[in-house]
Each structure stands twice: as C-alpha cells, then as structure tokens.
Length: 337
Length: 98
Image (tube, rainbow over all chains, first blue to last red):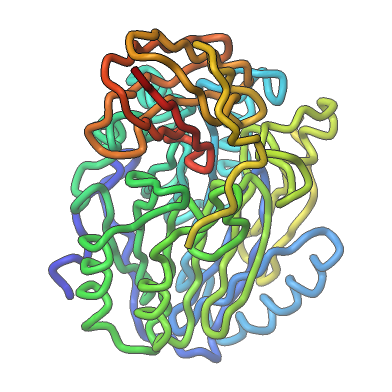
C-alpha cells in the first residue's frame, strides 16, 4: 500500500532526502557485492533482485569477479549501497568491552572509509545498553558522524527497557508507524523495518497490529520486487532457548513467500550467521560491542570476555572498498586500529 | 513456541533474597511469607530487570546494572511469576503464603 511508503523520516539523522532511483534495470544488470566489517553487512543492490553475500578475504576474488561480471552493462550510479551496523550497546560497562563507544566510533570510521558513500546506514538495534535518555542522545550524536544520506534504526530489547520503547521513539521514531515500524522504497527495492522487542514473551514478538501493517504494506507489491526486512531479533529460529527467535514471525514469512527475493537482516545475536529458506535468506549481523557465545556453547548468552586482540577479531573489523571507476570491489580484513 | 525452561532447579527455596547470576534467577522459585521484603541482586556484568510476567503485575524494576538491587515487599499471598525483559528466557517465581 503506497500510503505506507516513504513514511517520513524514521531516523532524523543525516540528510532528510530519501534516496531514490530508477526502477528500470533488469536482472542481467545485477550488481552485487557484499562484505562485512565491524559488525556490518554491506549489500549492493541493483534493481531486480537482491542477492546478499558475506565475503571474507578468502573469497574476495570470487566476489569481485562476480561483481565485475554482473556489473557489465550498468553503471555504479545505478546501484544502491547501504550499510548495516548493529548492537553498539552504548553505555555497556564490563570486561567484555571496556570502551564500546570507542568501538562504535571505529565502526563509524569504517563506514566513512569505505571509499563510497552508502545510500543509507541501518542500525539494527541495541543502540543503547540501558535505554537511558543520555545513551540515546549519545548514540544519536555519534551516528550523525556517518557520511551517508540516511540513517535508519530499529529498536533492540536494550532500547526498550521498562517503557515499551517510548524513549527510543522520542529519539528515533519520528515518522514511523505504530510502535516504530515503517517501510520505504529506493532503487526498486522495498524495505520494511520491524519492531520485535517490545512485547517479549520469551521470544521476539511482532503482534497483530504490526503483522497487519506488513500484510497491507506488501499487498500492492509485484512479486518480483526485491524485499529487505530489518528486525533486531532474528525472524528465524536461530536459538529459541536463548530467545533468538520471534514467536509470530511465521505469519510474516508467509506473507513474504510469494516474492522472488527476500532478505532478512537482523542483529541481536552478536555474530554472523546465514540461513536460507527457499526464497528467503536470513543474515544475522555481528556487533560493534562485544561477542556472545555461539548457540549452546555456553550456559547462557553472556558477554564473552576475550583478549583484546581477539575482541577485535570477534567484532570482525573488515572493510569493503569500492574505488570509483573500478568495477571491482576491494574487500580486505582490517583489525581495529 | 516456547523455549525449554532454564536449567536452574525449580524446587521452592525459602528465604528473602534472589541472586541474578549467569543469566538466571536463583532460586528459580522463592517461597516467602506475606510481609516479606525480597531483595534481588544483579551479580552479572550485563543488565537485567525484575518484571512481572503479566501486565499489571507488581514487580517492575529499573534496569539493574552490576551489583544493583531491587526490593519488593509482598503483601498478598499468591504466585508471582516474573522475568527479565532484556532476556525474557530468564523466568522465575515467588510463592507468597500466609
């Protein structure tokens, strides 16, 4: 339903202009690239289809080749490039990371050092650790340092402690619907940002009102429209015992089945994980703050204390560069300085 | 869809203190008499809350940082289920009797 599109200015950080692009490219003109760094998933999207891919140094060449090949016949200016950062936990104090603000600043520097200006940056939740006004203000101010056209957010459970997300929405909820959800379109891709951390019943929860929003939001979309769905808690059952799942996500998944390409991007679990179910691919992002154990590898999902050098590895500082004039994307591992 | 319950023993334990440690409430079931003030102490490095599982329930702590405490005096008998809203797989109960 178009009435929900371009739903204002969900995150009043950065420029107010909505990225917009032509919807005229074909799948043959697909340009794709991906990589991650410092808790970031970088996807390059050209109209027609989203294919997300997490690259590391070992498959850099393959990814670059694929990108180069697919880019034939198109131009870089036709592509959408955005960044996902997650779980900055501003305000966290503990041995797992004694300087989460510093780590997030480094991640921001990574964004600003990509070699291209991302069309937008999505922070997929747990911006703050304790939902305090000071922490929201701090993270908002920090993100104004990101050189991008737009900054979007979805809330994490740490952003909605005790107030059902009220403080979060005061800072980041402008122009959103319901409890903070929204959707937008750019470059022929439809994006939906969901809120699944407010009515936690052991697992993430979306609720009837939000599911109805998605149903109406998708109703008018052609099935070959690429759809990207953001949420904090995974929409797939990554590890329900630790709450790493959303109890009513299957009702959203059912609505997404008819689309040829759906990409669900979440945070929450502080580690990379990818799962494909038919037309839908789920990508958990890592964090800029501190690692959590792999599912079941610890009694509880407690912040993992690792030596400083390993912390930097766990935060996965990798950079993806795109040089103007080149078709190829340069991906390299880069530790936090 | 419901995750398995926490591994902590659910046998009721008498007392007036609950430790929040390793992402669990201990004891998982606390038994007290009416009029008892129960104190929860967060011993984790992560933050937790003590929040009634049902909307409108009496337990509603702020986010408890490390070593922070929350107190509540139970004035009516009953079974009070609560959880941590940040980590809702953390669940526990206070049983209040006359």
